[in-house]
Amino acid sequence: MKYPKLILFLYFLFASSLLLQGQTLRDYIDGAKVAVDVIKLNKGEKQEKDSNLMHSDSDCSNNYGSVCFENNMLASLEIQVYIKDSQSDTVSLIIPKTASDCSYNLPVNIYEYCIINQKSKAILRKGQLKLERCDDLQVKIN
Image 1 (cartoon, rainbow, N blue to C red):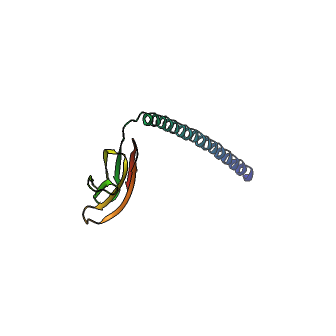
Image 2: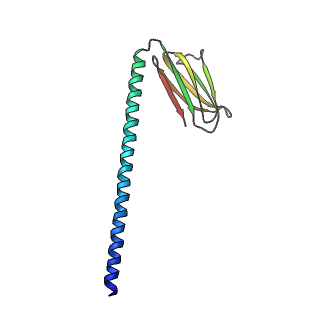
Image 3: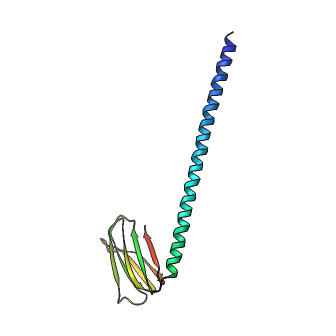
């Protein structure tokens, strides 16, 4: 007599757990639908932004560009930017730790840059940048 009641109890327990799992599964599916909608929304915004950028680039008629440096290091940096093979027109930027700074309206050319630790005066990196018409170059320093 005890066993049929136990079996019946286990059956109801199992059935109720299935119903709860069904609800949980339904919640996961609804959550996935929301995530897909958010991804579609972000993708649509990005495509719209890209088309606006392409439109504004085609209207660009000057021979200047800009360079931005983002300092992600834990030390202040000095950045020197100058036209390749000529250090006469040097642009110097001092960027505190975890900050960024830009130099705007630089003439189109090939530039060399030098990143220097401001405290120890050690050269951390040297390189070249090719600045083209209406460019907005972003350099991240890690």
